[in-house]
Length: 261
Picture 1 (spheres, rainbow, N blue to C red):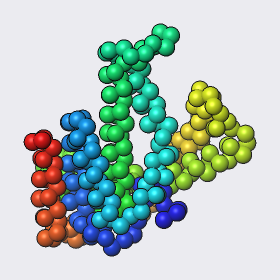
Picture 2 (cartoon, rainbow, N blue to C red):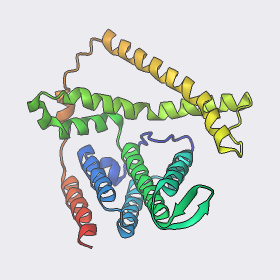
Picture 3 (cartoon, one colour):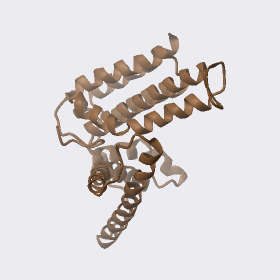
């Protein structure tokens, strides 16, 4: 578990690992919609408690998940700062021409917890569901869209490929960061502007490498005569067992409870 990257599938035999991918996707959407539609503090706390219970059921260690959250800390801090400084309302503190308002603090904290819940929920989904199963589940859920001429299989394949390469891109970003730090890049500078500028030395080669990898993948698929047709054998392997139906029922009830409260 020490080498687990953000978004990487962890092989296991827990209750969550055995669930059908469609069950996990729908449950994750329930939590996502609940925190996006209603930002009251008890809804956010309720969602975090549900995710913690799901992590216990998945038998995953919390430390690797929190280690991935630490890598997103800069984005979380910037998001909080933007909400804090740009939200109008009742001013509490004036720093030059910038006013910090009560509404800004509340919105910043709410947005921070929303992003935290979305991160935990998506990490739990990708760490307990293989990329192939995840793509198959998305394709099965979007299957009715075929009747309106939407290429569901190609869309599911793109999503599955993107999830597959998240750990690879993060590992490459870590390698580039280590190389740039060895060359003297000031990633640990106390000046936030200097740290942000030094990040361009990571983002540009990372973007170039990602585009090259995408081109190599496209050439490999073309050389193997990939035609984009759906895999019916893989779809037939999906089945909603009794545990999936009970889990969907429980997830639906838990999704409705905060709105009645």
